[in-house]
Structure formats: structure tokens, C-alpha cells
Amino acid sequence: MLRLIRTLLALLGVVAVTMFALANRAPVTVDLLVLQSKLEVPLYALFLGGLVVGCLLGAVATWLGQMGVRREARRLRRRVAELTQREQGQSAAEARSEARTPALARAA
Image (cartoon, rainbow, N blue to C red; front, side, top):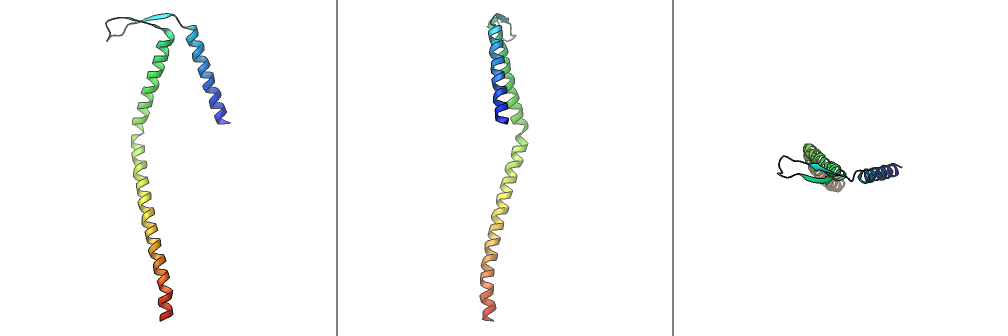
């Protein structure tokens, strides 16, 4: 159900962006400080370009913000693997000693 809702929302977004692009095809003049010339681009291209740049900046900021969490998760995964390996080694040693104990008890 959640997948259907997500798909419908994505489809609605695509329709909205397409309608915006079709309605705003007129060129606008963009004057950036770093460029000596002025650019003429369609308004929808300016809007979509800003949207893409914003999404990329947000993704990078989120990725950098989660760096500490990922580092801690890696450390904890290593610790769990180490403890699991140690526990399995102890279990194997206990099984070997229990296998020997009854034989020693019978001999006595």
C-alpha cells in the first residue's frame, strides 16, 4: 500500500513539473556575478536546475551528517563479530571438555 502511495505521489510530481515546464517556456535573463555575459535560459530550466542543485547539496549534507553514525555502526558490527567468534570458540571448547568429562568419570 505504501509503495502504491509513493508511486502515485511520484507520478503527481512528474505531472506537476511537466505542467510547470510547459507553462513557463519563455526565456529569462540570468546575470551571474562570476560570468561576464548574461545567459538567456527558459524559466523551467532555471527552476529545474535549482531543484537539482538543491537536491545534490541536501544529499551531500545528509551524507556528511551521517558519517559519525556510519562509523559507529561499523565499529559495533566489528565488535559483534568479535564477540560471536569468541563465544563460538568458547562453546566449542566447552563441548570438547564435556565430551571428555564423562569418559574420565567412568574411568574413576
